Length: 448
Image 1: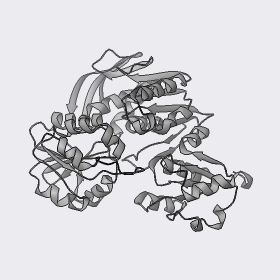
Image 2: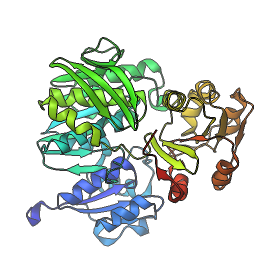
Image 3: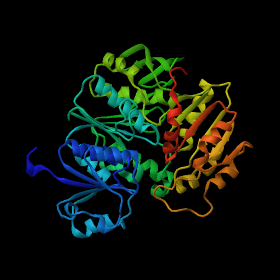
Image 4: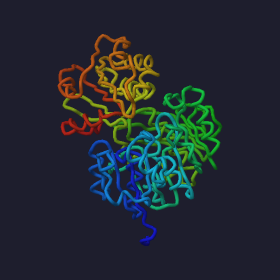
C-alpha cells in the first residue's frame, strides 16, 4: 500500500463486536485507525494493543489534532445517537460519515459475499462457515459477530476471494448487502422498536432475499424460496439418524450430491445441528468438495458465549448469549435432553427495555420452565427506561415459586447457595463480564 492510499478512520462505538472486527480489518489493510467508546473493556484493551488508539471521552475537547481533519473517515454504529458530540461534529464539518452496515457493504461490494441472516443463529452459522473455509484452505475474509473459542478473534483474514459476513436485521442493516449466496436461519419477530410490526419485520427479509445474486439457503419452514435445510425433515440438506455422542452429535446427511454417514460436530444443541447444516449448504453451493467440508467439522470448537459448557466442581455451567424467548427455549430443551435428571437453574439478564416489553409474556413462559429462575436487572444498551418495564414486571409473570432478582455482585454466592447442579447463564448484555470473573474456577467440560 502506498502512502497516498492510506486513510484515517474513526470508529464511534469501536468496542462493539461488529465494529471491532471492521476496525481490525482496516488496521490489517494498513490504514490508521482511531476509536471511541463509552467504557474501557477487555476488547478495547485488545484493540489498543493491536494499534488502535481509543478514547472514552465524548466531549469535543477529547478529539486530538489528527482527528479534527476533514479527511478523517467516520464509521459509527446504529446504536450511536446523531446527537453524539463527535458524530455531530463530523457531520457538520462535512467528513465522510457512514453507518457500520453501509461501510461493511462497501468493503465487500466487489467480492463473492456469503451472508448469514436470521433472528437466531447468525453468529454460529457464519463462524462454522468461516471454520470450513479456513480448514479447506480457501482465500477469504470473515467479519464475525462473535469470537471463536479457538482463537478469541472475530476477524479471519486469509485472502480476498470470498467475504463472509453476518447480515444483521437491526436497523435494516442487511438491506445494504447484495450477497452472492445467503442463508436465512429464521424469521421471527424482533427489534420491534425499529420495525413496529411483525409484518414489516418479515417484509424486510423478503426484500433481503430478493437482493441475493445466486443462491438462497433457508431453514426448513422459513416461507421463502431457496435451498432448504433441517433435521429430520424433507429438506435439500437433511440431518437424520441423530445420535448424542460424548461432546456433541453424530448424524447422517442427505444433500443434493448424495448421502454421507456419521458426520460429527462437537457442540451442543439441536439448533446447532441446524446451524451446521446451513453452513454446509453454503459451502457446497460455493463449490467446495463435500468430503473436505465434512472432514473439517469435528475440529470446530464453537463460539464464545454460544452454548459454552463448563464444569464447576460437581455442577455444569452453560454460558450462552440467548436473549430472545426462542433462544432461551433452545437452551432449555438442550438441558432437558442432555441432563434430564438434574435440577437446573437459569440466570437471565434481559436485554433492552423494548424487547422485554414486546416479549414479556413469552419470556415469562419459557423462563418458568426452569426449576429455578434468577433475574438480573435489564441491560439497557442504547435505550432509556420504559415506565412499568423492569425485571420485577417480568418476575411477577413467571409462574414458578423458586424465583428472585439479584444484583450482579451477588451472582457467585447465589450460584454457590443453589441446590441446582446445572446452571444456564443467559443474556446479551454485560452478564458475560460477570461470568468472566468466575471463569478461573471453571474448566471446559470435555464430556457431556
